[in-house]
Length: 314
Image (cartoon, rainbow, N blue to C red):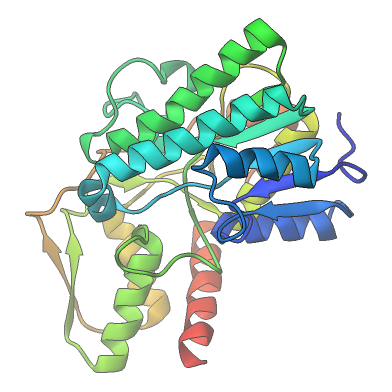
């Protein structure tokens, strides 16, 4: 086990949704006194010179790579080239320079989008290579999956200690509510809150509502990453999830209830559902480093709605 308290830790994307929760938890719960954020505008992680400057200036022992260009189905369909290039080039160069700078440990976050479209449910890590990802987010998912290949190759050839985590969709206070890039829970919360405020009698939701998803509360995800950083040092990827799935229809009903929206939900079946089902097998994370998600979905949605409503009133 690694004692993180006296380590110099760099979190890429540390100003992002997950990054803020992770940095706070490292500092407050683990007592880490040297946690540094590597993010725009100080560091453009697509540029090799700026990555080298990051390592030279911050001198990290451990790097946790969260930075990513992400979005929902719409953003993935509109930006496949950008989502592939930006995510691949950031990760490839960060990992290579970490090896050259003799970084003690590197933790890289992948994505559930890396799994094949028709993976048996629950998704097991050993199924990761058994097919092509769902088409709408395949470029993003494959860019991330290449970083797993790189970490395993560098471990095999150079003894580099890098681990790869596969989180499901995250949600919670501080999420991205920009409709151009938000995922399903913040997008639905924003839609319901704004419709209620405007007195609208209906909202329109993409797809059929039949697809299922798994959602992990952001504070739980941060704890899982820290536990893996402390306790896990093997080449195999590890899922981070809540261990359950919910249909988009039931999710919408829950958000409608919590936001107290009284109108009708209209399903736009001309829009894609994305991957038919998503639920992770989380047994490896529990076995290897004792991670079990704590936040129930209904409670997490309430916390997120309350946070967003307070933000909207400022």
